[in-house]
Amino acid sequence: MRQAFAQTLMELAAADARVVLLTADLGFGVLEKFAAAYPDRFFNVGVAEANMVGLATGLAEAGYIPFIYSIATFATLRPYDQFRNGPVAHQLPVRLVGIGGGFEYGHNGLTHMALEDLGLMRMQPGLTTIVPADPAQAGAALRATYALPGPIYYRIGKNDALHLPELEGRFRLGRVEMVGGEGEVLLLATGAIAVEAAAAACLLRQSGIRAGVAVVSTLRPEPSEDLQDLLSRCTLAVTVEAHYLSGGLGSLVAEVIAGRGLGCRLLRCGVESMPGGRSGSEAYMNHLHGLSRVALARQILAALAP
Image (cartoon, one colour):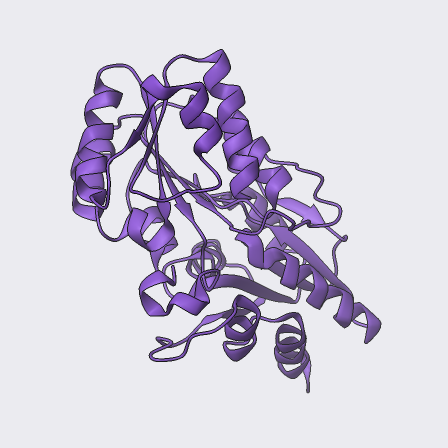
């Protein structure tokens, strides 16, 4: 999704002189075209994420729309205090772009695994939180929301070849997009892991189980009405996220079920414990934590067993 983000940002910058890009010494192979086309609107601040947020806050107050680009853990955790007390507290249009959610940087170990970012971001009032499922949706989400008032967090995946069949780039802020129809089982997924959720639904259908997939690409504003409508029509809801079980999509869906008195069961699939010393490819880490398509299908079949 990184290339889709960079290309779409180039298009937006060509049409809107307020668009500015900042990076903390990352994005090589992705951001060079922007830097070359708009050298006066590109800033590499070095490894100084907190300072980068401070600079972006000043730019936003001066009338610009600054995008801050870094690996998701560095973008959200290192400057959290500055982001909370600057753009969020003053509702300034700073766009925090976190690259590589979940285990997408799995080889680099725990420091690079973004497993709590969505919980931290959706906790902040007035902070729009967007998690595209594939490159086409990332581009659509950026075009639809870049000029919104107030701050935004975009969690953008690394994989530029990712494709979620039937999604076709559809994005509506605060809405849920269905792929693959509906069924007694509803898989709700956010971000790039939605591809594994959709593949797991296919495996379930091969076992004779009707399963639908809902892509939840907006965690704030919360798509509560869409969720209530979908959850009221299924027997088992399954949340799938490359994130700790607390704070993210699973928590959001549990809140809707409890708050609106819905009767469906809920199975939350995510990262249950800190990975510790384990590291490896995204596929390896996802399977280790029950997030591969095969592991997801097995968990759902076990939940459905009498």
